[in-house]
Image 1 (cartoon, rainbow, N blue to C red):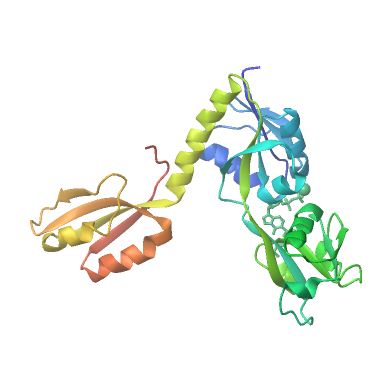
Image 2 (image 1 turned 90 degrees about the horizontal axis):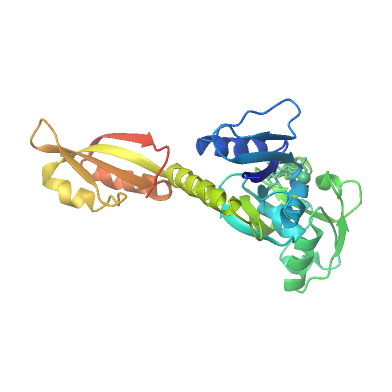
Length: 285
Ligand code: PRT
Ligand code: ZN
């Protein structure tokens, strides 16, 4: 078959963003009612909708060629698969939390404790590396209620806003893993799957790069032009266009989201005016 098979979560926290990623890559997907699998309309891609926990095994077996899963699931399952790209969504952390009332000084306070988790392997590894001797109880869901019903002394679970822990009278004390969605693949892809995956990766990287950057246009007094453009990295170099008012120029550049506000503050202080900030759809270098 001349298509690349991608496994994505059938429903849940990664579903919407996985579909959006394909759309951002200009891949049109028609999702039928049964939602077991579908074929992209304008790219050689077959999409399989699965439970996230099952995806690593399907990737190892080659039932799916590539898949989108949380790094937490990927590392816990320990299947023989390759990480191809981090995707920047589904961000969360796998954390240890204890009852609020427990006085917690450092990790040694977890010695001898019973800890409930759906991530027994990652927790065991975390404790072993730190010489902590705790009793791990594997449970598959509603981990946060375990201390309240006397099943465990503390938990290790995924946290994003922290409100679930708060509502259950727990506080976060250690981070085991920072996680986000990952694109992973079967170890040995044949042809043309390998080629199609590279094409898809090329698009994903262009989309990711665009998301992390903004296009900015600003009006700059000519006497400070040199100084101002030294603050603007641009993709290759900054664009400078003359304005009708000969004392001013229009400057166009691309600025990374991470240091965006710092750069804007510096530019304002140097007398830049009329700053326009535009989203970028794709960056292809
Ligand atoms: O049905 P299926 O098995 O496919 O889905 P699932 O129920 O196992 O997974 P799902 O949809 O809950 O999560 C899929 C993936 O999303 C996870 O493997 C993570 O990689 C990622 N992710 C990101 C999260 C969270 N954020 C998250 N907050 N997964 C789960 N949670 C849960 C957490 O377990 C806890 O119950 O949300 C609660 C905590 O959230 P806050 O905001 O209250 O801290
Ligand atoms: Zn799951």
